[in-house]
Length: 69
Image 1 (cartoon, rainbow, N blue to C red):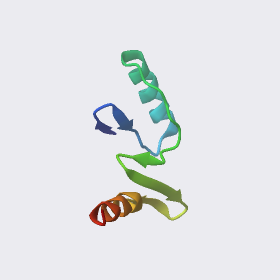
Image 2 (cartoon, rainbow, N blue to C red):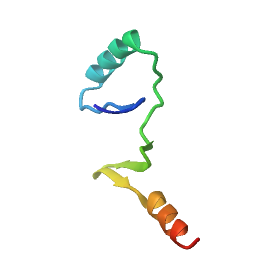
Image 3 (cartoon, one colour):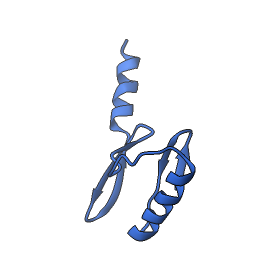
């Protein structure tokens, strides 16, 4: 589990365990499930058969664009 201010990512090999945790947290806090993780804190997340890949390409391009201004 990763929590940053009001954003949270839950990952686990056990789908039932994730569902149980989500139900528990939903009873304690107002929350919504945004589905499969695509972005978190500006990091793009790719999932494939080979694993999970993280990319900050957009962040780097934004930094480079700011330097040219």
